[in-house]
Structure formats: C-alpha cells, structure tokens
Image 1: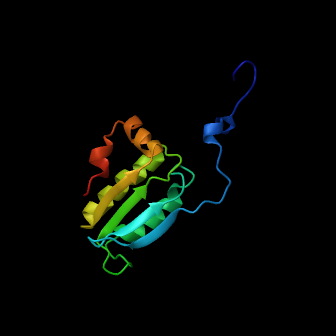
Image 2: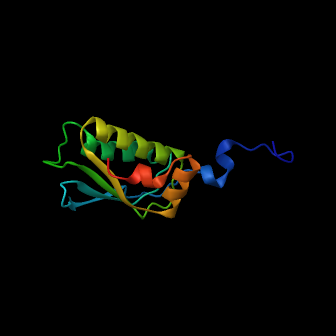
Length: 131
C-alpha cells in the first residue's frame, strides 16, 4: 500500500507485459566457423523467455537439426530490454553449448543487455566470449 492506494506487482510499468507481437529471431546464414548467426529482435525479459529459450535450443542441442551448425553466434544489438531472466538465458545457453561441444558467443549487445549483465554481477566480456 502506497499513500492509502493498494498496488499490485503488475501495476508498475516496468512489469507490464508487452502485448505487441514481436519477432524473436531472424536467422541469417552460417558464418565462417559454421555457427548459425542469430539476430535477436525482441526484448529478453521474463515475458519472452520461454520462446527465446526454445529457439536457441535448436542451435545448441546435441542433435542440432540445422545441418552441420557448430553452434550459435548471437547478435543482441536490437534487444530493447533485458532483465535477469534474459541474463539467465544467456548463462544457460553458454552452459548448454559447452556441454554439447558447441560454440556460443555474442557478437554484439545492446546497452540494455550489457546493463542487465552488470546488474547481475557478471562481466559482459567473459559471458559474451566464445565458449
């Protein structure tokens, strides 16, 4: 309760679900090291997490259905918002890639992603480097 007004968690603008349809990924060709180059075109927040995770999993799984893709190179320069869930997705993708002997790296990241990584107590250069 603030000033006699009862507010719920979802009354704050930062937590309102984005109701617009967004394109999660644009897949480009494989790059020179055989990685699928993926451009993320949406926020990376709790609201998009499941869809983003499912799409990334295709490139990082042991039985990758993308032919001979050796992993994924993410371009996050167009990510407009990122929260701790987005950072967790990045950490999980990196770990999954390592377990499946795949390459994982971030080629570019927006200020929103970099800030969220710092806010989580991590170093972007270490998280984004090739694994």
